Length: 51
Image (cartoon, rainbow, N blue to C red; front, side, top):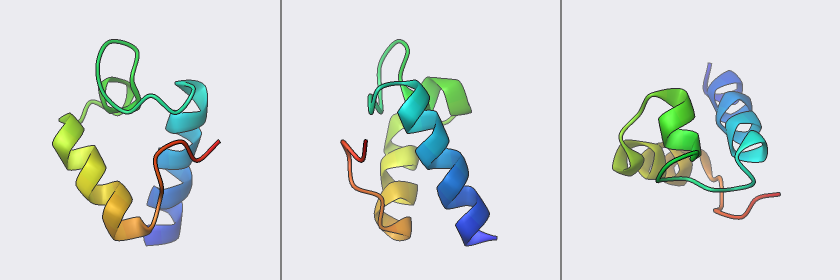
């Protein structure tokens, strides 16, 4: 399950050119609060600027 969530977040980051928060960011796309997304990224080992 975590691997699927990780791929989903990484796909969203790729679509948003690694932008996590703000207008057009992955958090907005995933309908999450930016801090929630940052926490999930840390838990799953996803670094900002992954692309």
